[in-house]
Image (cartoon, rainbow, N blue to C red; front, side, top):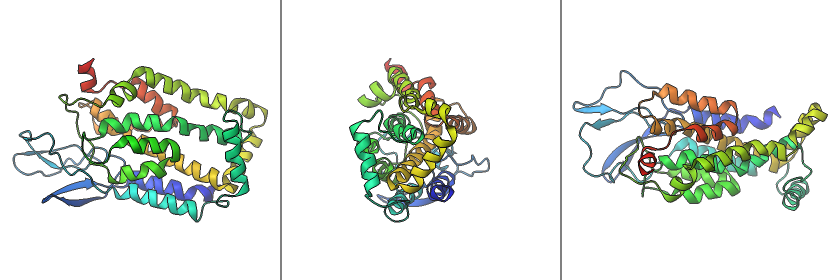
Length: 317
């Protein structure tokens, strides 16, 4: 079991801790775009050019010298895409690990039987209750991820997030990874004059939707029968979980995939927090994200319920 989780967890932690940056040449201008999931530490000694101010080291962003005067065009905010090396590396590693070194056999009869059982009876497929509880979080993680990712997207720039978020609900990070690897540099702040998209305004920013997502997240362990199984025999429950993950390729890959999606959600939370709290410090944003990780999935769902609306969402209301 320990060996099984070394690769996905190592890749995720590397992605979270990365602080690398590189220069991207686009249309005759050079932009510095990050290759990191977590915010950089603020550099008090950061030197900026005369007549400019240094921006925060936000999520997916490094400090840049910005002119004191506002730009003449709100649509010219940087490149329409930038390569995020850690996100791309994690996607490549996940694909390679899936088809080469993951436990079990590709398209084994056991995996086929598992998928058949899930399709035939999604509520009670007869699988290990702990594994099936974790597997069921695939139903909510795309919604939570969309809630923190969509407000960061630059309007009409780069890849559209919606198709990749839809793919994440079907094939997880296999579908969402390319978006993180090639999306436009995310927002540093909210422009109140810009309207958010219909889906963001009516779904991911809706408190009703956020509360329903939280309730459904809390219901998933109940639906999978986790509590009775734990009360009956916790040792057998854990042993069955380790057996299925260490022998089934479908189970091991789905667990690694879900772990990466959760890491993406947690690491995108600080930027979402700063967009809604412009006066907050980066340390406050990181601590908030860390708090959501204490209760995987549930913590992120709670964050979406209690966070304030976006500035333009508040103005629209």
